[in-house]
Image 1 (cartoon, rainbow, N blue to C red):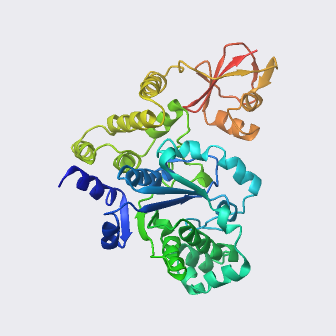
Image 2 (cartoon, rainbow, N blue to C red; image 1 turned 135 degrees about the vertical axis):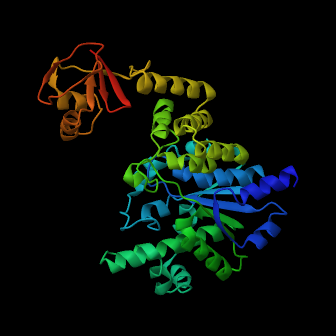
Image 3 (cartoon, rainbow, N blue to C red; image 1 turned 120 degrees about the horizontal axis):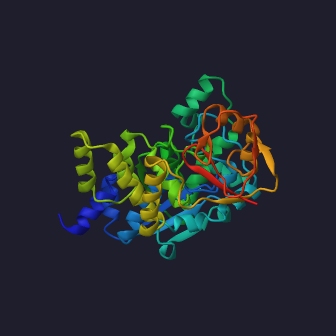
Length: 394
């Protein structure tokens, strides 16, 4: 197998769950094809879960194919519930605009934006009229939609399924028509929407797109990574925070993260798997993963600093070399008041709970009494949990 064939084979297998239709896709790939990925800005951050299909898009870009990144400024307002156990709330157009501010910049950490076709689906979805939507909807039955496992579960449990959710796959499918996609990439939870695109393309006289579904990854709590659950590692996280989050991953996810979120050679990853199976310390390989991801999204210099900082804080139990400084005007505060003032907790109730759990330190000393009044001194360092620090300035 020559080098190019090997790269093609890896693009079609690494982290890939299913291809429809693989034989047809391989035939199409003899010439440059149009590869589509859509993403809705339902939060301001692209996290590592969303980086997985972007990395796959990058693979096809490096093979010389034309990649199309569709930003769902229209579908983002509507909301896809393919992976949700309940109805996704409608976002305001203003919130979607706020979320969009750095989306392309974030995506540019992974793909070559200059060589990417970037489209916003509001350009065409906002122009559709009821008559056209009705014709698209006529291609599918309600049974097609409610046969999906998560929808069946919600109906069985008496949950609400809105008609808006039924229309979402049509919108994603019409995106494929608008950009004349040859291949669409998505997670396994997107399969129904991707298949809908094939049906709608046929209706509009286009050759149906091929489909590539990729493996989903778990977040910090073991559930699927999702901004809704707050279990994410975001690609714009500061280096030290990103490094620390990765070091807190469950050991069983190390190889999966190497495979899906990096492009380290698969033979090297297999070596890591074998060594861990033979008794290698998982922390060693987790540190390699953390270093690689910080290097990729920031720089090698920042990865070195993050590694040294992690050793200093978590192994040697010392304060980080670089701690954010926060001005405090008050001369004295109780602990919950201090924690909220300097932004280490969202509420007094959270501050009280963390103190009671032994999760708050001042200048390295654990604080046990939440009612205690703290005299504010310049230079004092407040710590919440393992990763949050603030240095007081007056």
